[in-house]
Length: 510
Image 1 (cartoon, rainbow, N blue to C red):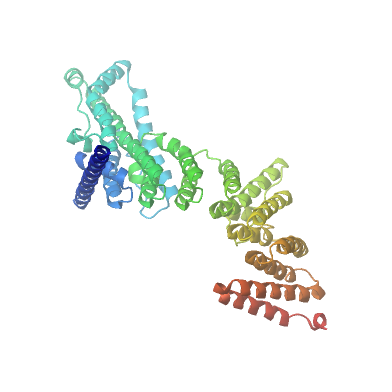
Image 2 (image 1 turned 45 degrees about the horizontal axis):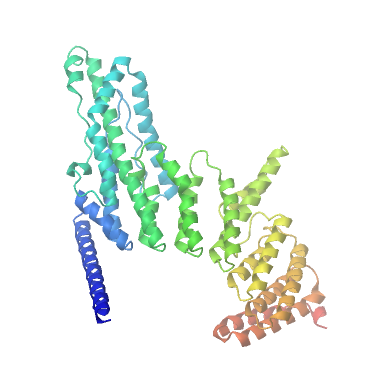
């Protein structure tokens, strides 16, 4: 028995020692990374060490900044290379500082497309023998391509042995076979040889950048799976997709593909924790980037969000982010459907409808008026969904807030007052049924009061308004007795109701 105990103690001591050594090593890596960041270093060893430290502690913002600096260096090396072709213009100028992420992506796409078009146009004009020479020159650039592949392991954290010149991109020199045989006899051939070097340098530099960029995408994905609420990691990932100085150097077509697929990452992480607001924020930002891509279909993206939020709500009624996102996308889906229906009928969209559609596409929010009314069947289905939620959990604040939006705003900015009154009274009846079962449900009492005040503010039923306001007063008084921490809130609400009662017509008070 004593031997077993000694064996366990020795094993525990060895495990503790290994853990301490590992922690000390990570501390050393982190400390070295912070020092490198202060030096503004993009050296291969510093970048490689930062990956290992970040996988252990993704919240170290300075190490992400170090890796971002390295990517910026590679991106600038691509975008500052001269383009091939006699008289070819350089890529578009960088956008001004302070623009939005979507505008930055659009500018980056223009730059990469211009660079790609210059290379393709030059290659198309090359005679057959020149294409063979260019192929030979690409073979001579194999060292640069191998450097790009080594860069992948470097950025993954396993490339301490990578060549230091991986941090800079230099145009590949023209092969001797071209300069010795052609340039001496033909000036135009000499220019073509220079263009061969330029095109090859661009392709090599893009390969180096895209390898490092994909390695950082992979690193952020691993870090987020281990720590899904790491704000610096999320911020670095959105910078990989939207920062002009990096994205403009990527080969044409790479960035749109990555942005389009980005929703999958957030969905995977939100499946594990559907209330991770970092994941919801990233999903929203990446959706905005995707909506600005050429050929994007924002309506299809909104429909996908409707399905995704319903899935999240069915899994967890308390998911406030899902309820809120639903209030944003449902009016946009309704606006898109209305515009499509008008187009199918051959009707022009008038200025009022146009303004409503634009406002809806801008994104509604809980508590704000929807510019476009939800279709009656959609609104009824959403109210039924909320009833299921609050009957399951009467204290579900997120569902009650969404319910208030459905009643007060989802009817559109020009909802008929009588229709609004009828809906409020119908929902008040449903809430009374819940209170019959759960008389101490504070949120139900607050909702009943709000519904009755809303009903009293619509229509021309002065005789009923006094009774409705009196019932609202009683409901809030009851809620105040149950929820003493919010006494000030109920005092303000009751003051508002009593002012409304005083303003009732004299005939209604007789």
